[in-house]
Image (cartoon, rainbow, N blue to C red; front, side):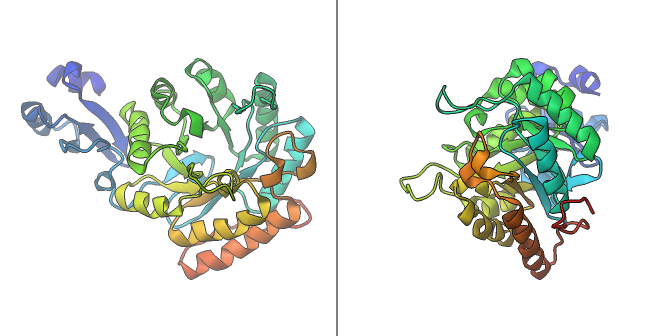
Length: 336
């Protein structure tokens, strides 16, 4: 299809195609009205976008009812259901991740998070297990049935990470790494794009546009806090941005309160607030033994706090006409 479109409008004219839902959209720069007319008449596409927006493919007009992104298996983000993605910040061992996925499933999570590669501010901090961490995640995924979300940190390892993970996460430090954004756009996996801690909403949406412009519509946005002058929390969790993005874009939005505030006692109130403001899900740090965690233990929820949050979310979502998941929290740790 791309070749047929470019046969009519050469690629040099800046056209971009992306299938969103059941529509094939093609963006044509506003200064190319003749190219847009050719595509309209060709019958090859359902919609030609010619507006002057910096992020036309992410715009709400492209899918007014909002997009639903599959994470793998039956797990989705967007629509009426509210998705929980939970797991440890970093993969430390098979035993730790196996215990974490048991907790995640019992609390109603639809996907497992975990970092094999951990870009850290200090070169002396735990950097993750790397390739071994990916192999552990693959084994736990096969045993648990939960799709895996993990971060990819450079374009060179995109294909390797995609072999082991269901969803490719772009972390806050790489939110404007445009080479990496293009690479994950071409990898054929859903992408979870965290907001850069120094990015405006518009810059965040333009970063997502890079992924969609590469032909991948399966993007989940993640608000994880921005840097401000306030030192009481690790970052300032910008929940207003969730409402703004839901108004401006069709892409689903999840919130990561764990990294946003950095303190486990603040995770629950901000998670509930995220649900109330219209987020489509949460990305949460949980750990079977937070004091022993090699990475961000202060923000990780233990078993008791995790189940307490999952139960409280159900009440909030019911009041909003939404639902969490059919899997109910099971304090014994066994999957329901």
